[in-house]
Image (cartoon, rainbow, N blue to C red; front, side, top):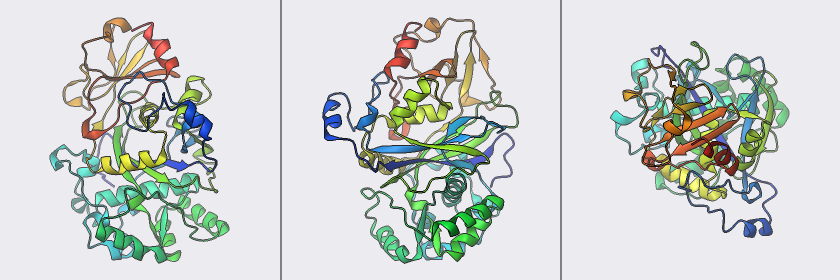
Length: 406
């Protein structure tokens, strides 16, 4: 954990995608074959794919209404880094993997000088022998277990097979992650209570149950910073986003009834449609990333893409709010209106311009989320994404409700 940070607290989250136990029918796939492609969608104004065409679902957790940060929002599982995530005790747990770079995770192609600080920080200088890429993933796995009961772990009996795959650099691109029953559900529930009480108990649990956090199942996806002046001065997070593709939706998913009061497995398209219908609220990062995932209706294609893309690295995104009387825009890096260097001192900007003036139809570099209200948003992206990432897909109702004002 980087205690030197003054503006943000470090966190990690997982976009957990899992194969449906009831696959889409052949008829539903045929009906959409002309509308949906499993290749990345590059048109930001394409229709959302039919939710029936997805062969996977994504886990969202509803935050408590009493939460001090984004109450009642549906979010991906995740949370703050703890000192125990970078404890030297993990060296013994991962002792079979310590001879590999980043414990077998490998390295990204992105030059160190362009890496987001959360990934580039030398954790040795902060007193931890655990590599940053490892500690961040441990946090994401632990928080997912605490909040949802889903344990991403590798049992000791499978570690030899994993070591061979890392040595031979095989299997990771084609194989979806399979969850293994580490112990019976009653015992796992007891450990979940203990880990919620004290994060360091996660280390003890892994020792006692002879398992490892499955850090290799998590692929780097992105890095979002909480915008300044939106959720309060004390609520700023620097969050590493990962994606994990599971073969099947877990049988046992259960909210913790503390921070999390409800869970939902749904396709990206269904989530966005429910958001538009005001049945649930999702924050801009969830909206943007779920819109990106609509470029893939196949879990295998999503897994293959995310695995290959992760080696490229990612960009740090600090949204900057541009506020008018009847709309607001989250500006992202690369947008023509984004402040130079994305200064951390920039709070919400004000404008008297109409939406037509701020968002002309042609000839502009857009990387923004336009919102008319908390439930009516559209991602407008005309730039080429860095690090081989995806452009989000915007549904027809969003386009319709914004196009009249663009």
